[in-house]
Length: 251
Image (cartoon, rainbow, N blue to C red; front, side, top):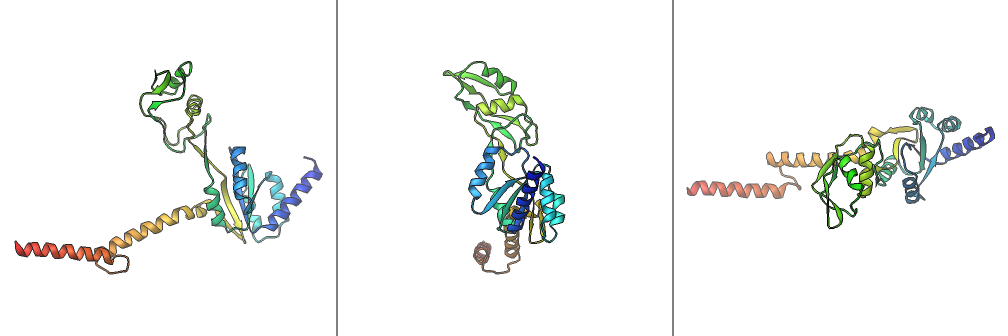
């Protein structure tokens, strides 16, 4: 890219950064082009995805007069991209997280969870492929002209590196164990920077509320403190106690 082109790109980036209230930094390492295009289509009209070079993005940020945007430069990953939107930070983070999809594993990928190959018939005809099952330590045989997996096998534990032999056989079995999506590193909005640990609260917080409500309900029932939420449980508890007392008196 010649100097004039770089100047033009920096100016375009500057204008984009000034045009939106929320700027998301994304890391596009290992992001398949197909999935990126699908996400682009799904958020069209609400957000814009822009793939950028790190040095040009830094230069553009330096030209933008937004409060504390300079501090946002430290968040830029090695292979950055931008999501530009006027949605508030937690809304766009939640929306992007919901747009993840499963793809085939490649050699060197890390298993995101335990990967199982289940027993049963496959669509594969017998032949040299049977040796690939053996290499992947999957017990297989031939029945009715098709390869059959003899028993359920845990082929990779969560966190393990997937070798080429396993990646190849998973593809043949049409098993897609790798979940991919845009990795939002951090978000700048109205002078504030929201990092991943804070943004993740949108996924964690609802469960925490449910857990807190459940514990509070159990405590209120235990100490017989009546509320709109627990009155039915307390009445049932009172009925059971009354029946037990009646049985004790009769006996």
